[in-house]
Amino acid sequence: MTDPHDQRWKPDPERDVVLDARLLRTLSHPMRIKIVGLLRLHGPATATTLAQRLGVNTGATSYHLRELAKAGLVTEDADRGNARDRWWKVAHRSTYLERLDFVDSDPEIALGYLRGVAQINAEAMFRAVDELPTLPAEWREAGTISDYSFHLTPDQLHDLLGEVEAVLARYRTEDDDPHPPGARSVAVQIQAFPREGL
Image 1 (cartoon, one colour):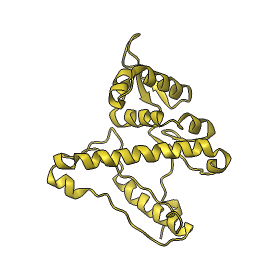
Image 2 (image 1 turned 135 degrees about the vertical axis):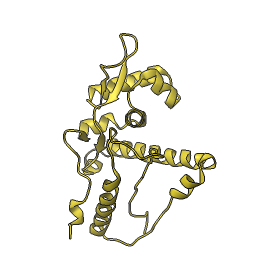
Image 3 (image 1 turned 90 degrees about the vertical axis):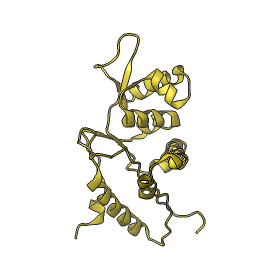
Image 4 (image 1 turned 180 degrees about the horizontal axis):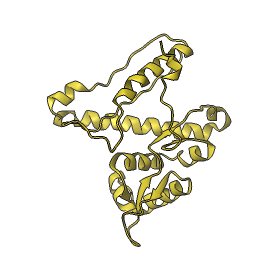
């Protein structure tokens, strides 16, 4: 049997980025996490397009794009745009936070990043709930927003997540892979944490 600890998704150094203290500091602002997420989901965009999607002014998105570019998290898309219209794209397929020791060494930055991720995930769930009335029945019945409770040790939780990630890895495709007819982008969120006070 495969060791569940070996089943966890591993970052590909050619395509993914593992956050260090400097990158974590750059992404500690929720707007920057949202920008990276939008560029991953929708592809290259201008500061103006991102501002419209985020409901902010172009000056804000331009500033955050420059900060993300300084950190190497986004790059200019040389195949698009002109001197007046700069297009941006993500520099990495996925972002990984492998070490949570930043919670001890720099709690303000680490918790700022994690709160931003939690906020964005919660907003995505609210949008999904709001969209339910407009979804075809097959999509409404296929998805879920569920909560499960277990009594586990840290090792058991680690093993559980490794097994779940192994299942998810079977369904992961790259952007340039052909998608089956009727497929659409689906978000699968995983939050696993000890319940407060229990």
